[in-house]
Amino acid sequence: MTDEEANWLTVRQVSTLWPGVASVDGTARANGVRSRRDPPAPGGGTPGTVRYHSADVRRVAPLVTAAPRKPRCGTGVAGCVVLLGLVAGILAVAVWAWWQCPGSDTVYWH
Image (tube, rainbow, N blue to C red; front, side):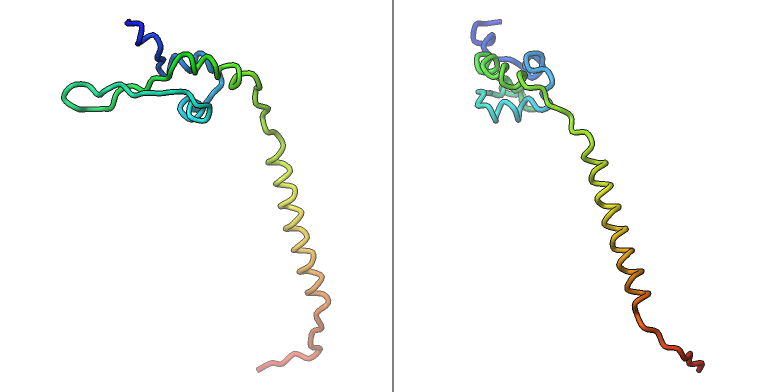
């Protein structure tokens, strides 16, 4: 491995330095990490491997791993309770309106 190659890391190598990061590419772009793509193999084919500059990756590592994300618990339950309350309220208004509607005492048979 040449000295130039040592300055560039693959996605797998960056993932070990940034544990818990779901999207290495998105996080790298958001934090200004330099990247490059290796040239494709001779004769065409798939594009080369994406690599990230090691100094930038190490600079950003404390920022992306320092604050663990708190899981969002309970938002689904709260939303469900609000939705059920809204449906119950609509049904209550519909029943109340039904009982308040004056009906005809006579029934017409045709």
